[in-house]
Image (cartoon, rainbow, N blue to C red; front, side, top):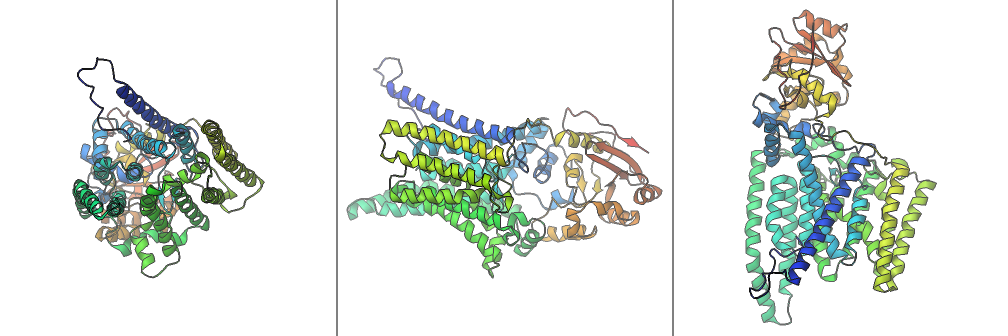
Length: 637
């Protein structure tokens, strides 16, 4: 993105040897790609080998994959999830991801495809970081790339209810946020041709993040058009500049309008939060961590405030000409996130509900990477002016509040703002590094360069010291291509050999993992939630048949439901199998067997279950699944 689209052609009269300009251009490209690769490699290393509690290494086939991959698998294998109620009535809006999953499953390498998808996410982050490093730290781009990556690897992965930035998951919102980071980097630096490609990509990868990108590009376009009217000393020059800008903006406007149309079409076909009142109810009862700021601990709000402060601080290090567009785009998203959180948290009538119903905090995805830049820029750019000195001081004050939640790999205050001697020492060390960087403001370029390299190295060392002394540890991760882990894969093969294709099962709603591993539809679970509309009403009815909302955090009750009641629910919703605890001596299991249901013990590591089949339903005998899976074993009594 930082290089010309084509190399200059050598003159025909010149010898065949490469021209100096051509060599310089190739060398420049090589350095750019090397910086991008370094950022990508460091992020992968920190994610995989330096995890923290609640922030593990990459695993595919778990977490959000429970919701996001079934439709693509069904396209590749129509028997998988055949008749699944949720997949039919509430498909997710990530249509491009469905095609990627279909491709991976059809070639028998879905885990590998998802790992490649995750690596692509980090590669995009690497490109964006290299683009900004060369512009914001032209004398020290390598220091900028390495320093930013170390910080990005430890800051909270979840802020204001949205996750990204080194969270180990191969899902559309991670790639969409990475593309948004690259798009905003190109906008800030005037790489406008890249927008023609990046904007359609963002909207295709993740429709909600695409909507944010549309808003940011619209704001940037308005600022640029306004600036063009001010360009030049005379009226004729200003009018000519404005006409030229409007003409040049035409292809961007066409692409922007096409992306708006595509986004609206996707939301029409696969609606998200179709009924605001329904989505608010879901937020308040099932996913408060995502979109119910009124229920968040106060430390979460401190983290949002710290992110906003650091993001705004980064803008003060921009050149005066670029400062306006930075604050009109990234600054607006940062302040908008804080405003949305406060409106919802304090339940401001109408406005608070709007922020919650339409997930107003999501615009924070645009600011997160720039919060890391806010931590780094005082080290890269000496405080030559009083304003810079004040900004560096503000960064030092905001920094501790960024690390008071468990989503970070540095933990200050044990999530209770209970700072002790350890926190004081680490905060003091960070301030000392900032002071060392500020002292270079009067040095000549060579001495200043050496100081920047030393302080950046010290900052990276601080990240490791703070991480290992509080929350981070070294670990050798499990194979990232192990689908759902060894236990989940083995359990799934056994379950598929029992539950016939096209059959549904009934299980505790809290156990959403059974659905993906078995490749069978479920009556209801608490992970697959339609976000409003008629499907949401049906989902509540199904959940109510098993006890309602409270059962989403309690799986013990399911084993105590009388057999007759379970059979009644299974009959009502057409389930041919019941998955429950394996104890054969329990009244529930004995009564089900007395009613003619056949008992099958299915166990793999921590997944120890019993599957009971309806009278007259025969086990499938085929494990199915990905080509190359080995059949498991199941016992029948």
